[in-house]
Length: 91
Image (tube, rainbow, N blue to C red; front, side):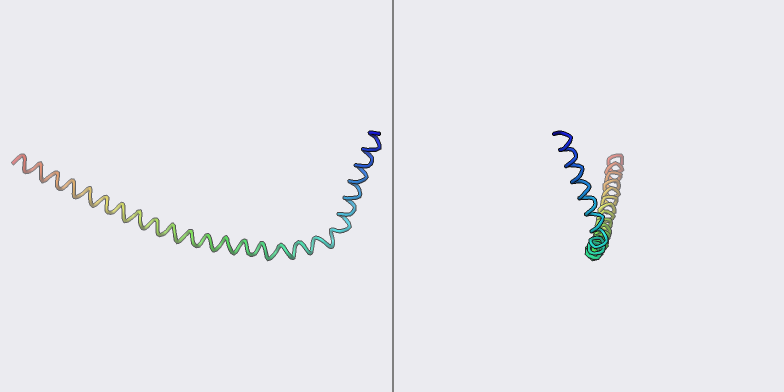
């Protein structure tokens, strides 16, 4: 019983493999011709997304640079005020 079950499973696998080999010359060109536009669309979408990310990154960088410049200016102002207060208290 077990031997015949194994033989049926193996025979089924052989049939499936043979069918795949016979159908491959027909199926592969169809699949590849259908896959090309899909792959091309995915690449286009990736390029567009990358360009948008570059713009967002540039905007973010500019914002961070502006904030850093403002922070530096505030530090200079606070330091100047502290020096003036110290000079006034000493004098």
